[in-house]
Length: 392
Image (cartoon, rainbow, N blue to C red; front, side):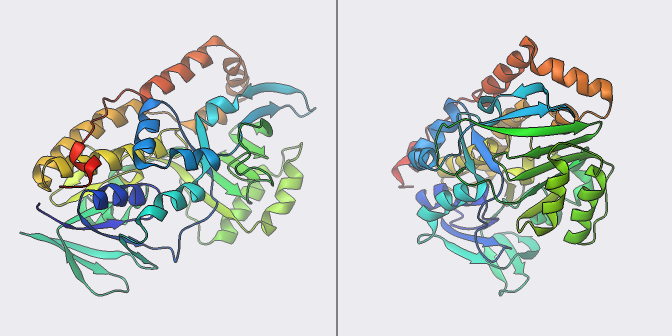
């Protein structure tokens, strides 16, 4: 087999999933991750449909995901006087099975931890492709040479910047920011199908949610791109923008400075004409991310499966495998479309808010839900027998 030594940048979802399949196919896998360890907690992610389930079952992790799933959470939009205005069912937001991102990362990491080499607390600083491989420089570790390199390092991918060009070429700001703060409320891990309710408070261009599965608090606000200097500035930005909302929002903002867990980022989408270049390929959000768009985690595990499967089927020949992976995944990821959760959840006008509330109670919302579910199953998943057997 050609190209046995491979480097994966990123150890969240796409990275460990790709490591699992490449190791099973006979590759020598190294994973480098900037963070000092796996990141626990984080927002909830979900899977939906037969294609997602099939890949998870072939990995042997579906039952564990079921055991550690979060319960369904309905999101209720509440008026200033406490009246319910609209509701999004947890069956829509949580898919067939929902799990905290950190729990999923741990499940994916566990079967590869002893068989693959994980390097935490480091990252790639430079890449140079030669005729027979890729010379890689690291921020802390010694230079190394690999046959192939994979970017699985998120929407702000360093591998993509080094190989394909700056973020401005590929990352589109969608006009909104979102923030999550605090661990999910007690009892939200592994409690199965129990139904919970999160309360959402709206104003034009603003959405604050208390008690959701992603975190104790979630915020979304319309804004042009901002230049934040530190985390304190990010927290202040949230407090300043939401200071006028009522309901539980004042209490949420009072607690926000004390929340240990806090994350704020732009709603952004990655748009690329190709996910491969020479001996480098992108998988997951680095190639086709769309923050909070509802497809990202599924795209990551499917992309990892297809990329590894095509490499196994091609005997490690990246020129054949990358072309097939690129064609398959560009067709599949188009199904995610241009969905912009900011415009849907936090419209910028009072009329938009009224339209959102009406839409959520209409049959058109049910049709949108069905389309999204069908889109996630719109892929003929190859079996890749060589990868299944683990002998290439």
